[in-house]
Length: 545
Ligand SMILES: CC(C)(COP(=O)(O)OP(=O)(O)OC[C@H]1O[C@@H](n2cnc3c(N)ncnc32)[C@H](O)[C@@H]1OP(=O)(O)O)[C@@H](O)C(=O)NCCC(=O)NCCS
Image (cartoon, rainbow, N blue to C red; front, side, top):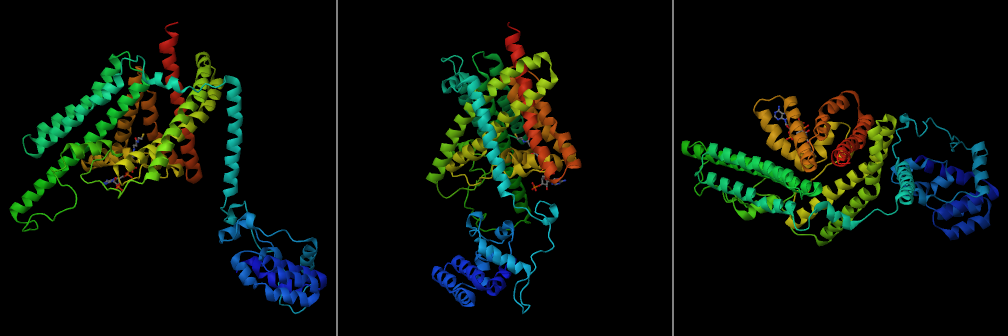
């Protein structure tokens, strides 16, 4: 029973005359017995109180239901009731009538029973809610307040933006981001051409599986294939003038994904061959388990039966970068789930494009003069202004890509492993953030780069630095080549994660660490965006003026 319920019974029983009747009526009404309430109110005195007490459930009952007792007994604060499974704020009983209040005051003043059963104390040793010693942690209302404040302040920004610039959203303009010349589709040609690399990798593996190629030759051919995946599209982007930066990012992004997938494909098939060889040696030497009818039949495909176009293309389209012979599969396609994710995909894509056109582009354009004048206080003001839409769009991108898009692909392919992200938003360290925000990339880094390096005897710290440097290279590749402008900002941004991870891990803990991760995300990205846009603007527009 809760403390509030404890105090209820003595007070209701011991109040006298009209006040006691009112107390009893209120108790009965709260217990859901209007008839008893009426009787109690009319009867007055002890009789009425007794009638109500008989009709109403016991104080324990009321305490269990979490109702009523609070109105009659000493007040308890709401969060504790909620924590104990009590009702939310909307289920609070109505405030007591004035005479009921005076009854309670009377009881509190010592006008209670003479038999000493009652506990008249209304104070106890306790901390204020907001002091950390109180152990109070239910900040749901504060969170709602934050959301309301966020909506209100952004509504003001939204209106201000509309008044200042009018409507800038233009879906047709998006097409021009992909196409410069309607008769030339270089990005699409690159994407279609990437099938050559997929089929080459499959062919090399088939030859390796039957022993027509030595391991060394296989490694050389795979390396050439993988290098070409990265170099060929980069060369096309740099050479072809009709390719747009956005189209180029898309083509290079797809080639980077293919690079990581085919790297994994090569590694896993090599591991399969090594396993097959080790098994053959064991069988020949007689040390392995002998089976009259070969291996125990497994339900999935086994090496080298996996080397066919169907399995290969399943992997190419599956939302993972790590190859497996038998992926976990979901039992069926859930149509409602798929439709919801599809709707989100389309809606958030539109929203992101709209926000970029309406909010980011004018802010960036307005920042150019400040950058030229090198007015540092204005630069910081512009940076902070850009941080808000940039961060919002980044969050939308996260949901759009990691939740909606990858789930659409997974649902269509019945790909079972849907862990595309973990709770990176709770990161209290930069390390935790990188372990949890992009699971496909993190899994690939661990499986095909970090752990093999550690196995070769490289130190853990060196291996981590190497992973971040490779990641920095790919970030730079995806920005510098499409912009046809070599600046190290993306590389430096990614490489800076190493000292940042050290600093946050060493000096900041808990909420401070979490805040540091958020600040680095909110400020770091717009710095890089402004750097690139400024340099691109200076290179392409100012030079030509
Ligand atoms: C570098 C990186 C891979 C390090 O990952 P991490 O999880 O912090 O590394 P840890 O040292 O904690 O170890 C990870 C694994 O290696 C294993 N490991 C670590 N040291 C080991 C050792 N000496 N011997 C054997 N195994 C070891 C751990 O047991 C762990 O295994 P598990 O995954 O099976 O649990 C990670 O930070 C990363 O992915 N960074 C790049 C992310 C990135 O660029 N993303 C781009 C997104 S756009």
